Length: 163
Image (cartoon, rainbow, N blue to C red; front, side, top):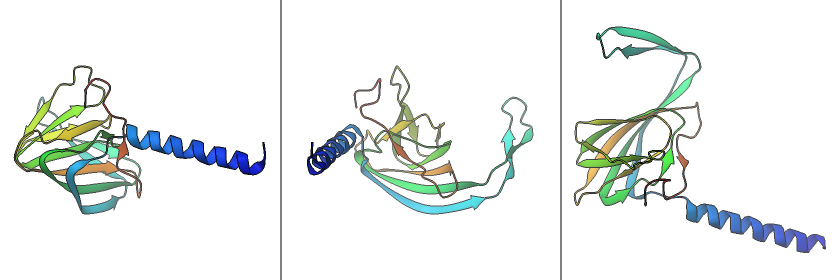
C-alpha cells in the first residue's frame, strides 16, 4: 500500500471514530451554563460537620485545588446530557425543579430536587433534566484539578436509563 493510500485510510478511520464518538456522547440541550467564579486554593483544612453529634471536624486537603462556581439555566424539557466530574459537585436548585439520574444506578431512580434543595454528585456520572414545563435554575460548586477540566462527557443512553 502506498503512503498516500495508507494516509487516506488512516484519515477515514479517524473521521469514522470521531463521528461514532460524537453520536454516542450526550451533549447538553436547552441548558445555558454561566461561569460565576473559578479560584485556586492552596492546601487547606476542610470543615466537616458530623451528622450524628453536630461536631465540626477538620480534614486536610493536601494539594492545591480549583473551586468552580457555575449557574445553569434550564429551559423547559432541557437536559445537561450524561457527564461526570473529577470530584464532588454540590448543586443547589434556585428556581423550579431539576431531576437528576446517576449513571451507574441500575434502577434509574429519579432524584427530584426543588428550589432550595441540594444534590451532591460524587463524580460517578449523572444527568440533570428539567422534566417540567417551567424554567429552572441551579448553582453548582465543583471541585476540580487546578486549571483542569471539570466536565467529561459520557455515552448515552446511560447503562440503565433509556435516555
